[in-house]
Structure formats: structure tokens, C-alpha cells
Length: 309
Image (cartoon, rainbow, N blue to C red; front, side):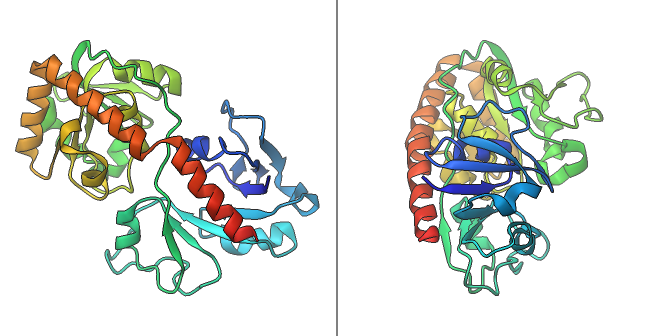
């Protein structure tokens, strides 16, 4: 068992990561909120940042550029490190260089093949460890002829999250939007409902009542809410951007760069509950096979042992 220092940066990713067989140290204080109230296993341990110097740490999982230089100061010693890149590059894509591009001493783990392809990782040794999801179970009922969307701060992020596309989709099917920062979201004449930010268990139940999951995002690594919806056995309509074409097979829904084709897919699924149910079952089967927790934890075990020895 390793002592793994990791910050709670991305809730869904960390929820999967701490399901492994190691002891996960989650700092409070400097940039950290520990578990932040999450119902995680007992081996996910909160620790004040000021106590890290006296704590046994075998390997550090970095997730933000500022951690690269700060971690040695917090620990007071050198510890093996690995960097997880959760995001697509910003700025001048595809020429954006990664913060580790000029280093070869810290392995760089991308969470999607698209990220590894599009980032300029320079000399950094790279590897892809795809997402794993804590299975919420097949909760799909599809009883509501509406589409569910999960996105945080859609107004501020605008075109990045495909917020400008929502009026066109709302013309086909009413949309229920879940997430943070929804207060200024255009209701499109009552066709878009801002539900708000719900606890995970309630979100899963509410989302699974919608006939279809809509993923309008243009530029993101790979929304974990999309993978969670597939685990719920929801059929998917998704913009064909970044990793989505690889994550959503044809039998699980409709993926396209055409708004018209996506709208047609929404219409078909809303009007044909049987088709929606079949595609949702296919989505769950694919998600379990490709984004299950077992492979994710196994791949991370291999990575952590390799780095720490």
C-alpha cells in the first residue's frame, strides 16, 4: 500500500481514484479542502497541509501547474511525482505547450487520447489512463419526454459549453439543465429549465427520468457527466468534438457536428421510447466495458508503482 498525496481538484475523477487500495492523503489548507464532505472510503484521509513534512508520502499526484514547485516546499524533500492532465489545452491550439513539456523527470498522464494528441507535451514521457466511473447503476426510466443536460457555469463559459446551441435543441425537446451557475440561463420561452446543482445521488435519479442525455459541449476533455449518463443507461445526443466520437459508439446514440442531425436524433429518441431504451442499454454496456472502475484502478496501480520504485 502506497501513501499517495493528491488534491481534491476534480470531484468525479477523485471519487474514482480513491476507490483503490492505497492510502490517499487529501490536504486541507493550501489549495485544498480535503474530502469536501464526500462519502469516500476510510483510506481517503484528510491531512492539514502543515503536517505534510512529518507525514510519509510515497508518491504525489499533481494536477495543477502551481503544484510542481510548491509540493517540494510543502514536503521539505524530494518525492516521486506524476502529473495528471485533465483538460484540453487553451490558447493557440494545437500549438499549446504543456507546462511539463521541457521536463522529462515527471510522467504526464492524459485522461483521453485526444488530449495526448492535441497537447504539445514536448519531452515529457506521456501515457493515457482513461476515465473510470463509480457505477451509479442502471437507473434509466426515461419517463419524461425531455432532455437532460449537465453543465457548470454555462452562461460564463458560453460557446465552450455549447450554450448558444441550446435554443435550437430546445425547439425540438424541452431541456432540463443541471449544474452550478445557472441563474442567468435563457429559458428560451420556458423550453429550458435551470434545475440547479444537486447532490450526486439525487442528480442520478433525476437525470435518469429524462428521455435522453444531451451533451452540447464544444471544447472539453471528456465530460464525466456524459460517462455517468451512459452508466445510467441513458441514450446520448452529443456534439462530435474532442474525445466524444470515441466515447459514444453509434449504437448508443447520435454523435454529429451538424446541429440539424443532432436535432433529428433528439426528435427520434423523444418520439420513440423503445429506441431510446435500446440505445441506452447499449450506452451502459459500452461504458462499463471501456470506462469501468476496475481497469481504471488497475492502470493507476501500475502507474503509481512504476513511479514510486
